[in-house]
Length: 461
Image 1: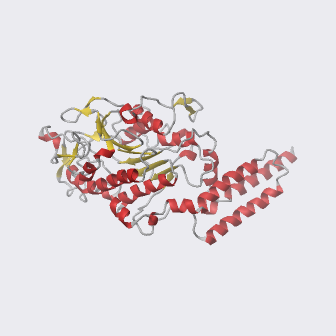
Image 2: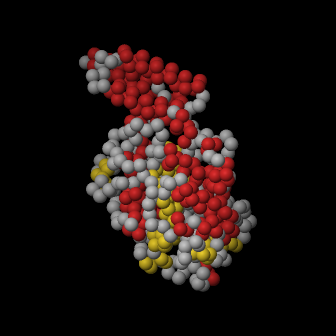
Image 3: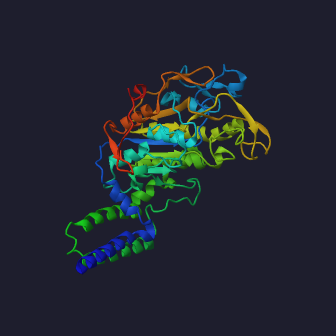
């Protein structure tokens, strides 16, 4: 018995050494994440998705579903403009979208029941009809599931990157191995860098190498005990962690300085434009799953698209932010097609829901960008999951069309109504994943099926 206790103590010590071998640079979990991500089989294929997320929920009327014939208490001050596709109009705030409409398709009839930000995000990205208010989902989002099913063996760069990750989303019971590799900050800043990717400092690499060499010396002492080749398996994933930390390809994938100034200017020299460009650069480098979030100061005073009258003067805020939004999204669409990535890469643009067609008026709770002084009565639009507009481009889809419609006031979808599981089924189809029959054990060990809907055929035909 004493001998067994000594053996367990020695094995624990060795594991602690292994866990610390990369902790000084990468943190405790990097190698573990690589190991965990490799436990599932990959369905193959190299298709990719860039999800451009509008946190807070954008007004469908001031973007992709204008309603010029609605009563004044609904329609707002902006008019529709024609695009380069006959019969398709967008809001006048999006003139660059109008120029590339032949390269995207609009869905105007997404409907779900999540009336708050957490519920809306959870419903749209997990497919489960969540009604509770929880900041973290009970179920994994679509991209975490795709990350698990595709695996991560032999990759020097992550499969799933959030620039940054979508608020209120996550891997839930799949575990942290399938969370997005998180990228925060402003890629437009000259000092922008991504921690734990492609260490360029030779001294840092040398220190990391010393830690691994020290661990290997400890390993040698216990090889006789290690009868199941556990150390060799660990070495494989530690090697992947080393690649992620030191490989030139990993560092260059995140380095926007390699892009021509003219292209960076086309996207817009601001946080959103450079995030969108980074998303394109990542999928071109081999990342399959990318979220690009358009939040922060460019949105207005409260940093998101949540245009309640207490937050923003909705029409002033939309006018301010859409100049950056219009430029970044249209540039991303053009770039995907011009580089021949349009069959492999699908671009999806959405937030968690639309906004109330009926304009509300309340007093501002604070002055600032897109909002009048405190106490000023101003117009706003509230949460509205009964009518959400989405944009799709690339992915080999049929473009230059509108799918579905809402009523004259923009309140309810009336034709070709699409649900949250249909949206997810379409993303899975593009990624080469059949979710039917797939289930994962939750935290209690119960198998939870992945929700499955009907693919939006108009997109995939």
